[in-house]
Amino acid sequence: MALRKKGNFKFNNRLLEFLFNPKALPFTLTFTTLAVLFVGFRMKGIEQAYQLNTIEQDIHKATIRNKELKAQRASEMSVPKLREFAVKYDLKEPGPEQIILIP
Image (cartoon, rainbow, N blue to C red; front, top):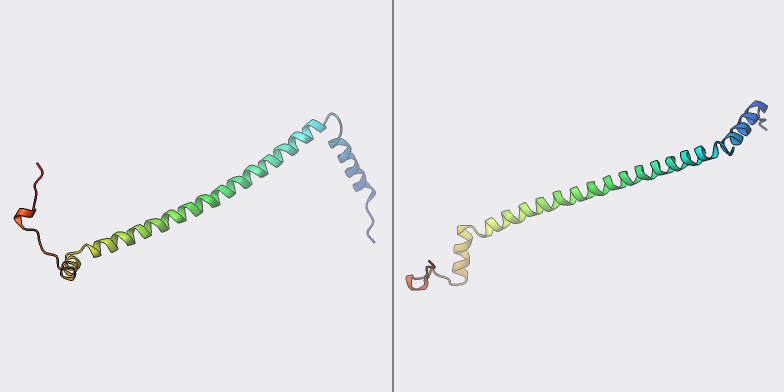
């Protein structure tokens, strides 16, 4: 069984008396409030950093997907694909009477 030192107990007792002393109580409460607020703001900052990182990853994925879709559209709009599409659906170039010029 461990025994406490008498001097250590006196120090803890004196510390509690000082902290809850009517003169020091406003300081103790102010310091405690500031410490809790500091921890809360720090945690909120870390949480927002995680959210920002997630949003940046989503933007990066969307950018890559957009590039892939643009490449796919370019390949679908290529001349050989359009000619193949025209043959498949029996399309032909318009005649001169079908072309209308808008001034």
